[in-house]
Image (cartoon, rainbow, N blue to C red; front, side, top):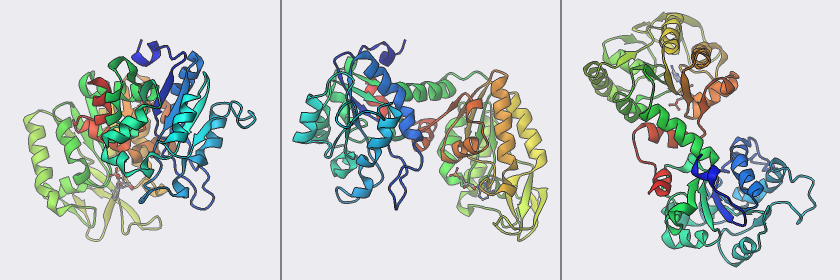
Amino acid sequence: MSKFSGYNFANQRALIRVDFNVPLDKQTLEIKDDTRMKAAIPTIKKILNDGGSVILMSHLGRPKEGPEDKYSLKHLVARLNQLLGFSNAPSGDGGAQFADDCIGEDAKQKAAALKPGDVLLLENLRFYKEEEKGDEAFAEKLSKLGDVYVNDAFGTAHRAHASTAVIAKFFPKEKRMFGLLMEGEVASAEKVLHNSEKPFVAIIGGAKVSDKILILENLLEKATGIIIGGGMAYTFFKAAGGKIGASLCEGDRLDTAKEIMKKAAEKNVCIHLPGDSIIADKFASDADISSSLSTEIPDGWMGLDIGTMACDMFTKVILNAKTILWNGPMGVFEMECFQHGTKTIAEAVAEATQNGAFSLVGGGDSVAAVNQFGFADKVSYVSTGGGAMLEFFEGKTLPGIAAINE
Ligand code: AMP
């Protein structure tokens, strides 16, 4: 049993760092997507069911100079009440309370008065510059609000901020822990990176090689094979002397691409590039569309999706894998005419998962793709943390994880 599941929160005030950084409508300030709030509910409920109380802290958006109404977490209270099943509670009786400053007298008093089953949401942590600076005194003030510290914000685990990392040291080891969401994220990521059943195939796509160099280099130490798709593939083709027309290319990364290919050969890691591409005469959904070998793209045309041969080849590699990591789309999946490749890969990952492989999908755009194509529940794990997940797979130590484990 995990530390969190085994802990009895009865009569404890749990201070939980959640990631409630949800998108709000600019005009109405209504929540556009509550996925991140939903993700924290099992952790909150376990604590309340044990007979504990909960103090929730989060950031929202990027406030510049102190408090701004459009970044206030008060806009989340009604949805929080619904998600917790408090929707019919008369106000002040069973509904979540709100403290309009995350530190100070009001927050202190409200936290101290919490009874078992109560929930208190604190105002945006980033209304204080001290949060992002990882200020110790600020972290200590926050820590005084709870008896136990629970970090359930994987999305900010790569930041050494006051509430995500620095705060942990003000709690003894037995009173600081991951919540259920964070436990799931860390366990899946560790399984893939440190404990993968082979063959381990990583699928890396997206626009730029420059964003993915560190993850590619680290995966060369871990993976059996790496599928490279999306816009970044064309820098590799160009580096090998191919004709890529007007496809995306980072001229200053040609040597990096060559270096990665060389290292892969030395380490016996198979790099799979898309042999053919769906090409277009402009970056638009009403473009003229054709297909060609990825090394023979005519002048003025650009590769915007992987071709049918590449789909078949990648599918075979994926179906043979026992562990799969997927970050980044295979093409411009936002446009219907260039989404076939990404969809095919999603299907293959789902099928491999059904056949017993462990699959982890992470990073903003690949998560958006599996959601859009309806495959989110057909893969083993969909990570909620874009930047955090990328840094984990780059081999970096995430401050939010280290602070709990130290
Ligand atoms: P990233 O954030 O690096 O994972 O990149 C995701 C973006 O890459 C998406 O918006 C895709 O539309 C874009 N993308 C994927 N394939 C291509 C391509 N062949 N050419 C241009 N952009 C691409």
